[in-house]
Each structure stands twice: as structure tokens, then as C-alpha cells.
Image (cartoon, rainbow, N blue to C red; front, side):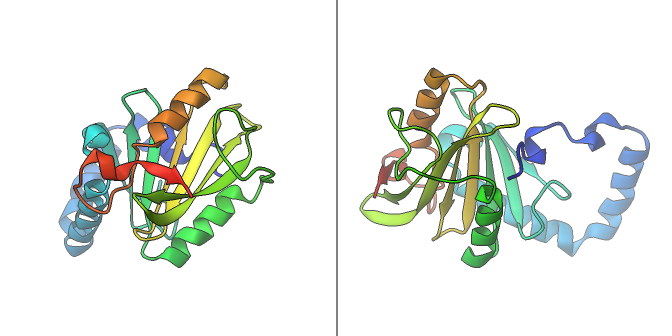
Length: 197
């Protein structure tokens, strides 16, 4: 598991000035089509993030992306939870990242809710349609509680974490997750509420 994804931490590039700024200016001249493709991928990913939190999102570029991801955005929910959305080119690439993230954990429960112990997995649906699987677990290294979910239709992997390890934060995280998307497109929040499936 990426115990704390790099995009949840300040990038070392932000700590440097001067040479980084000059390098970025030079790269911008050379980037051309790849930069436009990356911007289009970022815009596409942002269109799937619920409008209620989209304004609190920042696209994340390489090198903070997993190798197979084409776009990512780091957001902050209204409840203060950091959340990461990662767009993959297809379901298989997303699934491989999901499996790598969860590999260190064992899952003994078939649900994620406030009354179920952590380290669970469950399928979920949007409206009446099954779209993915969510997991909940506590990271042994930093004590944070994570909810990580995949949307098979959109090839988007999402990860959110509590800001503390207490049970009330986890309960709030689960309540927020029900409106976290990702959405098929700019649709109403009512269609984004996942239900256990």
C-alpha cells in the first residue's frame, strides 16, 4: 500500500524555487502536445468529481502519479478529509493498482460501516447499478483510517483518509463517502450516492 500517497504530502518540488521555475518555463516550450493531452486528461477526471468538492481539487501531475495512471486530483472534502482520485486508461490498469494498494492487508469482513470492524470490502452501486468495490482499513504505519474504492465503469480509483484515528472520524468519512462519486458526468448529487450491493 502507498501508506500515504505522495499527493497527500507536499511535493519536494514545491520546496525548491529558482531552478524549478526556470526548468518549468523551458519544459513548457517543449511540452506542446503531451501537455495538452495531460490537461485534457485532468479536465476529464475533474468532470467526474462531484461539484460540491470539485472546487477544492488540484490536478496532480507526474511524478506523483502511479505509473499507469493518466491523471489524478487531490481534493479536500467539506468535512476536511483529503481524497485522491486517479484516472487509469482502462479497468485492468486500475485493478492492478487497487490490488497493489490492498496487498499488505487481509480483509475479514464483507462490509464497511461504523459498526463493522475495519479491514472490510464490499461492492457498491450507484442508483440500481453495481459499479465497483470499496474497502476500509487502518494503516499500521500512521494510524489513519482509509476508504479506497474503484469505479469499474470509469476506471477511477479513489482514496480518502481520516485526519485522526478515532471512530467518530471514521463514521464521518463513511457518511461523506456516500456523496464522493466519481460520477458518470455532471449529474445531480442524488445519483452519486453509493449503496452497498
